[in-house]
Length: 569
Image (spheres, one colour):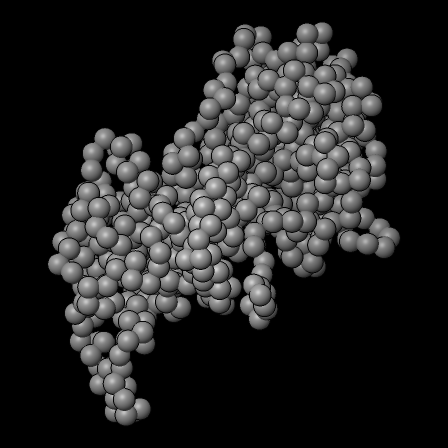
């Protein structure tokens, strides 16, 4: 019988001493529950992912000191084994570090294992900083049981499709009773289910039970959902930790039956295979992402430009949930083209949310710019330049407020509009973080309805959800004046931007709709037009604030495309 504690913690990148404190707190709980071992996530000492901090000599020194402090902390829980992830210096040619798993006992390192498969795709760039470990297995004998050790990506290649080596097979050849995997697996829609499928197949193939420990928390664009799990030798999930929250849970593993019970030997509660609905997943992921981004960057309050439109409404609702209504401010900035509803709907929304709404009209400011433009350049300011001017005046006003009062400015662009450049650089793209920039416009409408349904009341007014989308930068302007209907545009964008990274059901639907468009000349022309719009606006996305990633491929580190390139010929 082996008692093992899954310590799903929320480390902060670079806060080595703070992360040690988190680990010590969890280890004390494990000790009090008479655990033999406590398991922490991948790179738990530094937080995942430290990136080019690993090249900084000062950070390297702090890491060396931190490792010694980690050993001291481990001594405070005598005989309790700590399984910890950390960068470890190495000698010889190649990169300076290994991505390592260490097992500590009484202040000493008793086992080292170095990650073999270093993901360098999508949002990952581990080969930039780490050298792969040797093709070996590490097994530790604990309480008369053999525990095999593994790090994240090393368990994702059991089908042999992505790498030439298979660490899971090598570990299985060592005949452990249980596999323990430490992980920093970022979250996106469908990722929890994908983990269960990949590791379920591996466990079933090798007839090995597994404990998978993941981190949680928001780190810039990425959010980690936790959802650590235990799996039996048939690939069934028998335990799942909380999602989007820290969770320290002690389990008992019985090697004779290859089964798990709780810390007291009682049967574990059944795990719901369905998990969260897509909209509830989006809500929880974005809320945690904002909470941690604001906390780690030193912000308590946020400000949002409140246009009376659906994007700003959803951003305000999510911000109020994450930070508290008293810590969020909306600012409405009507121009001569603003509809009556842009102000009245904003007022209703903010009243429903319990947040403060301030009004700062921009009509006179825009008029001054128009007058100055004519005086300086001898021609009237009109058309697109005048439209963009209004957005930039609003963006400047919001940044003034942010600078003056210390609020984090949240940008409100969605993935559909950001994809095709339907936004104004230095205007509505201003901000420190985008909450909804990885959600397509059709998903914005759906999530707004979900927010209302979850609350059991109309938080986001129906008038906002039902009105035709408009930037309100020209008389009678509608988004459909410049863009195809979002129901069509979004399916095209999903295929062009995410493609194979879409969940299977969504990919089939989008590919079917795009294939239907290709049957007619107008449809083919539309697809080509959208391709060119995506390519032409890469420069805007490069200058935009980070956005919280919720889907398989998001703009930012997950999609690296040159600006000055011929993308579509």
